[in-house]
Image 1 (cartoon, rainbow, N blue to C red):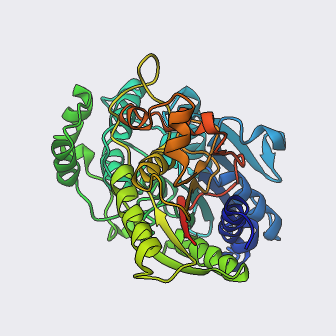
Image 2: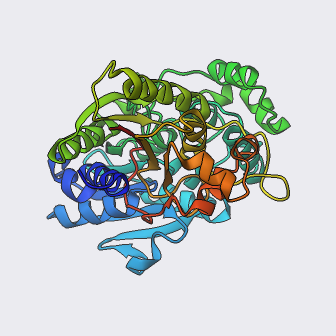
Length: 428
């Protein structure tokens, strides 16, 4: 077996390759309609999805997609016949508002013989702001910031988002009616519910505004007055799955964490290491999830149970970070994967033979330029030797600085897909 960093990088590359739209999208092409084909989409994987669909589709089409700033310009503003717009992530901006308006324009006025293909991936919630009447873009930004700092799981966040939006929760599909809508999804959601990916602009689910209000209360969310007024009225009710205007639409999950974890497991086997997939849908506080992973790793290292070493434990899903501090003086910088690894490093401090890796498959962990980092039983000690207090760094959510000081950040750059986090713990 090669060194742990090389080994983890191989697993990451295998996981990302398994979610490459250029590879998987051909298996999900819809039938040719009598009328027009219009492609719309949003998310961190929208550019490669659009490029793959444009290359695979042998008939006429038009389209427009939205990706995050910096990920669309390299193609000159287009993926073949599909225009590419850019907007902000994870906090919406005015460019996103303008892009959303253009998506609505693209699907209006279609007939029953026309086809809309929606290319949806994680990150689309922020890229498609469209506040309902009575709310402003500033209100939607404030909602998003409150959700990101709350520690709520992504499913809960998206339940709130879709009831405070006029595009999420199926509204874009209703705007396309009576055209048929076929949604192709690269899922970054634990459990792969397509209605939660990008808050489901073309996919309805059964959650209600009362569910959204319950989440607001549970997590103590301080939302703008305009948002709370909207949630208190029937105007916040999102379309339901049995809405007759959605009948005949199709939804396909074309890439997911489960498939990527299986690919990583196969890559580990080729390197002579048994792989155990713990789960593809882990949620919860990053530092708490780290504690559980570390406890299993210590048990294997000391007692060869519940699995014999050498072994690599794999897990996916999306953890959360409740912000205890903000960036700036005394504040921290670091995404959920960095926080997971910093807590893990503290929990295995001094244990030889335990190595860990965590990274977001889209190539960006939070708002930094890294996807994640590497850690092992020496990480906490090396931080202290460098003059850093790892526990203090964790307390201020500053994992980025801690791992940057060691040169242990993992920065592959944007990958063009997004099936959420890959965590790997090697015990040997």
